[in-house]
Image 1 (cartoon, rainbow, N blue to C red):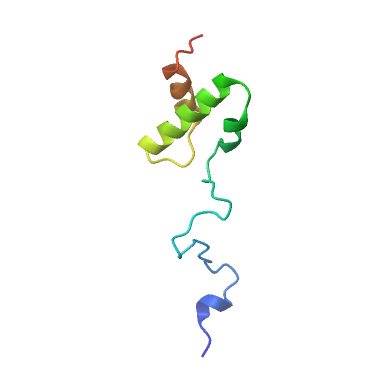
Image 2: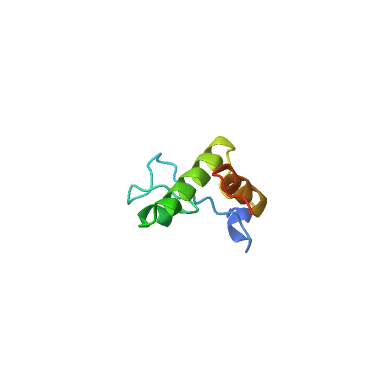
Length: 78
């Protein structure tokens, strides 16, 4: 007898990697990963600060308020 879960149109599909391996290219999935290749050191500094914030607060993505807090922690003021 076929499973009802497989026959429903909105069935959950688990796409996580169960083998414990990382991404095939060896990189991590990050919100601002391309900023590391910037030639501007201030952009790289901001990307690193955002990554550290996300790691410390266990967040994959951050809000605009959190982004502002990170920028302010780097010394920005208006």
